[in-house]
Length: 622
Image (cartoon, rainbow, N blue to C red):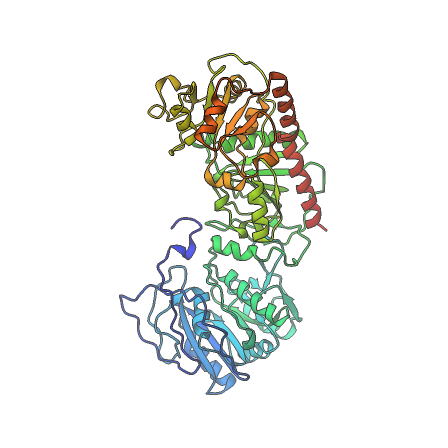
C-alpha cells in the first residue's frame, strides 16, 4: 500500500446493518471465506437515546477476545442482569480473525474495519442514558464500570490508563497545531512498591481531578444525548481523540480524567492523510502549552508527528535555522528539477538576510534532528509534506494547486500561494488566510546583457515537451516563425531547423532570454486558472527580454509591463511574433528589468517570509 493511503485502498461495503440495543445475538464462528471487514462510517439520523440506564459497549480486536466473557459478567454485576451490554469485534493492523467466544452479546457476527467502525456499529441502534466504551485489552471490574458510568453521566470521561510496561496514557493534550495530540504520560502518583498493580490501586484513590483536551484510550464514558458518529481513521488514538472531542463540544465540558485502569496492549500508530486532516481541524483550538515544544520521533509511513512537551531553550536570536522542503528526489535524478534551482536561490536570499538554511529533498522531509529547526518552509510542488511540530511552519504553494486540500492549508501557521486567484478562493473556502506571494527571479543571473549569439533576433522557447502538447510551440511552428527551441524531447516535434540545445545552464538560459526577439511561455491549465505566473515570465523580464504567454487569470493586475503580452489565440500570436511588432526599446526594457529585480527577486520574497516566520514565532511563544 502506498504511503498515505491508509484505509482508502481497502475494499469496503457502504451500508451498515445496525442492531437495536436489546436485539443482541450470540456469536457465530467466522467462516474461512469471511467477507472483508466493513467500514461503518456512521448511523442514520440522530441516535436513539433512552433517558436512563447504561449501555456498555465492549470493543475487541479480532484476535483479543479472551477477557470478554469476564467483562460481560462485570457489566451485569455492576448494573444488574438486564444491563444493555453488547460487543463488536474489529480488524486492525491486519489482525487475524479468531473464533469468537460464546456467551458474549455480539451486535454482529463478523468484525468490522477499525475501532471507529466498531463504535458506530455498536451504537447505531440506539443507547441508554450513559454510554461506556471499553476495549478488551483494558481490565475492568464492576466497580470500574460504575465509576466510569457515574462520570460519563456528567460529560465525557476517560480513565487514566497504565500500560503493562509502566507507562501512562492519561488523555490527549493539544500542544501544537499540526502535530498529533500528546498523550499525557506524566505520573499522577508515586509508583507503588509492589509494581504496576499497586500503582493503579494507589492512583484510583489519590489522583486529583483533571481535565484534558480529549480521550485517547478506549476506556471512556459519555452522555448518550451527546453521541455523534466516530471517525473511521486508521489511527486508534486519533479516532478516539476526534470522537471524544466532538462529543465533549456538544456538552460544553472538558474531558474529565477519572479512576485508573490497566491496559495489556496498545494499538500501533498508523498516520495517513485522513489522520492528519483530523488533527488539522483543531488548528484554531486553544493549545495546552506555550508552543515551545520539540518533536518526537517520526511516525511512519507519513503524516503528522507527536510532540513531547519540553520547553525550548533556544534564545530568540535574529538568526533562525530554516529547513526548505522541496519535492525533488535526492541525487542526480532530482538535480535537474526546477524546485532545486528555486530552493537554492531562495536559500541564498535568506542567507543574505543572516539566516541559516538547509534544503531538504523528498527523502529528508522528516529528519531525526529536525527538532532543532526554527522554521520549516514547504515549497509546495508535487508532495504534501507534514508540518514539523517543533518549528514555525510556512507553506508556499508554487505549483500543482489542485493537489492542495483545505486541511493541508489549515495545518500550517502561515500559507502563501503564487497564484492570487487561487489564494483568494482558497482563503474563502478554507477559512485560512492565504497570502499572495508570486514566484521569483534571481537578478544576479537574469539581467540585461549580451544580445548576440545563436538566439539573437529569434523566437525562443526553453523547456521540455513535458510529455504533453504545448500549444504555444505548436502554434509558432504552424505560423512559420523563426523558432528556436531548447530542451529535451523536441526532435520529432519541431522542424530540425528549430532545434536548439537539449539542455542549457542557467547563465545560457539568461543569455537566450536577453538576446531573443520574443520568448514564448505557457502554463498548465490549473496554474493559469489560479493565476500562478510562471517564473519563466519573471526571468525573461528581469533579463531585459520580451515574453508572450498564454492567458493567466489576473495577470494584468500583478504584472502590468510593456514587455509582456498575452496571446489568446493563434491570430494574436501571429501579430506578436511579426518581426515588425513594435516592442519597447532597450531603455524601456532596462527599466522593466530594474523594476522586476526590485519587486520580484528572491531577496524580496525572503524578506516577506522572514517577517512571517518571526511574527509566527513570537505568536507561538506568547
